Structure formats: C-alpha cells, structure tokens
Length: 472
View 1: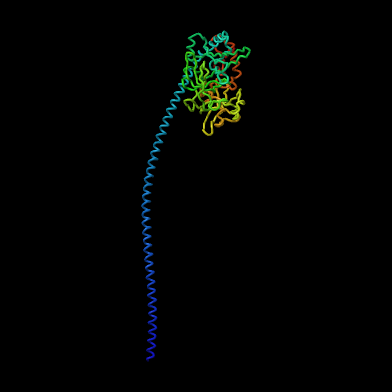
View 2: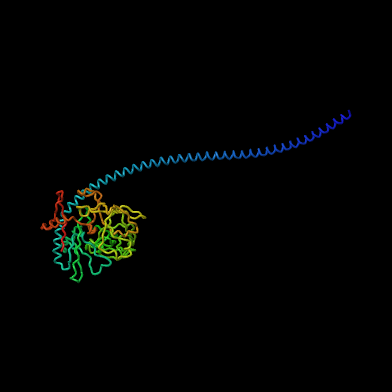
C-alpha cells in the first residue's frame, strides 16, 4: 500500500514536472505570440499610415486633375471663341476682297475703254504729224546739202542714239538736234512741245578720205508711242542712255539739269562699281563725271533702281520687264573682255520671276510676223523658259522698253504680247517682211507731194502708212 502510494506520488511529481515544462513552453509561446502580435500591430499601423498618406496624395492629385480639367475647359471655350472670331474676320475679309476685286474689275474695264478712246485719238493725231514729219525730212535734207559739216542725215528722233563712251569720247561731238528750220523760233517751240525733230550727226575728223559713218535707222512702233519730250525728264531721276558700242541703252545717268531753251540735258554718269572692263547693265553703279547731252534724244527710258542711294544705285531686272540677253555670254568673259567684242548676238526675254537664291526666271520672246516690233512668248531650241543664276547676271545686256498688248489693237495681235521699243531692239532681230520693204520703196517713189507718206494696202483691205527713211 505504501509502495503504491509512493509510486503514485512519483507519477504525480513527474506529471507536475511535465506540467511545469508545458507551462513554460506555453509561456514562451505566449511571449512569442505577444511579440508577433506587437510586430503585426506595428506593421499594420505603418501600413495604415502609408495608405492614409497615399489616399491623401491621391485626393490631392484628383483635386489637381479637376483644376486642370476646369482650366482646359476654359481654354477650350476661349479657343472656340477665338475660332469663331477668326471665322467671322475671314468672312469679312473675303467679302472685302470680293468687293475690292469687283471695284478693280470695274475700274479696269473703265480704263480699257478710256485707253481705247485715247488710242483712237492718238491715231487721229498722228496722221497730221506724219505729214509734217515728211515735210521736215525734205526741208532738213535741203538744209543738210547746204551745210558742209553735215556727214549724214538720220531718220526721226527715235533713230538717234548717243555716241558717248569712256573709250570713244575723243575726237567726236555728240549728236545735235536741228529742227526743220533751225533759224525759226516757231519750229523751236514745236520741238519743245514734243513734235518730231530731225537729227544730224556731225563729225569733226580732219581726214576727209575716211568713209562716212553709216547712218542709224530705226522703225516706228505701231501701237504705243515711245517718243519723249523735255517734259518727260525730271531732275534727280535715273535714265538709260544709248551705248555707242552697239547703240543699245545700257548706260545710266542721273539727270542734273534740264535746259529747255537749248533742248539739252545735263547728266551725271553712273559707272559700274565693280566691273569696268565689260558691258554691265546690272549691279551697283556710282556717280562719275557730269556731262551735257546736246540732245535729249540720247536718253532712252527712265530706270527704276531696286536700291536708290545718295551716291549710287543698284539695278536688277524686275518681274514683268523685257530684256535683251547676250546669246554667246559665258562667265569667262568677265575675266577676259577681249572675248566679248561686237557684233553681239541677242535673245529677247520677259522676266517672269525672281528668287534671291535661284536667280531670274525668264521666258523667250519671238517676233510676231506682220508687225514691226510685236513679240510674244516663243520656243527656242525646245525651251520656253529657264533660270539665270545670280552669278550669271551680267548675261543681261540691257532693258528693252515695252508695252503689253491686249490683243484688241489689231487683227493678228496676240493677247499678252509685247510691243518693244524699236530703238532698243537689235537690228539683227528687228526686221520687216521683204514684201513690206518692197511696198515701202514703191510708195516712196510714188510720193511726190510734201507731207504725203507712202501707203500700202493690208490683206484685209485697210491702208496704213509706211515710214520713209531718207538717207544721203
């Protein structure tokens, strides 16, 4: 019994030990659990704080987005208002353009009608002038026979061109103007009013064995009057003068003084600034010597420089102008002037465009058969138009004054063609048909009365005057 009791006590003690061990294990587990709970709580707290901050940031971002959306909405409304305003302005502008175009069209029609009336009056006015011109030619011829200093008699004033040049001004006098009656003040007044004067070239050479200089001849234009009077000139303006090398207007001078009593003009020459050894009609020109032109007919046409300085000008071909080109020109000629000698060959062109980098766009002009100096766009060697680079600007010889025709001047005149000033067109290009020459010679032989010009009959049955050129 006692043994049993001791055994039971030992078992109880062992169980108590086990219980203590289990209790310790449970305490350890509890501590570990508490520690894990605390760690979890701490992590949860950090996570909540982080999520709270993220939520706040999202809320702020949402507010910023809402503000930006509102701003964009306001901008959209402003853009719509601006677009509506621009559309309205565009409609108003188009309406104004349309109205101005209509006004311009009405004015153009009115000007065309007025121009036709003026042309009709001009034709009526030219008839008595032609008769007076024929009378003057006869009287001047008689005067020339009495004057021992006269070498040759030229046709009307358009035919007279300057004999001034830097290399050829020694031993020659400039051409002088002699009216039909040099001693008559009545004829001097007529010359001042713009009527046609006769031009006599006087040479001072002592060598009587030299051949007489070949008289210059030039045909009259048919539709536009290229003539000029003293009233055409204004002091300070720049004009082109005829170059004695080939009688083309490539020299420039600024008008300094006009003497109406002597029918003379004083000009200050404008010399090429860079190129002096070759023929130059484009580029920069500076003031040179001042000289008196004894005849205002040595001036061809007014020049409109692209730059107008106090002591220099710059001249370039402008869109819409007609120019003559050196046909055989090359860049090497600028460095070797000996290669660039007369007689020159030319091509006529219209300047149709200009670009600072590309250069000048030009279109060939060809003569319209049956007319004195009417030219239209033409094909040359399969080419209608081409570019002239800025480096090739000296290919331009001289500007040819012209007048654009509308096609209603006469049957056979192409619309948009040009009538060129015959005095500025090289004689190799400006030629009459052979049949017209024969008719003119026949009319000259048959014309015996003073003031009666030769007439020929056109194919349509109408009659027109043919200019009669009297040569010694």
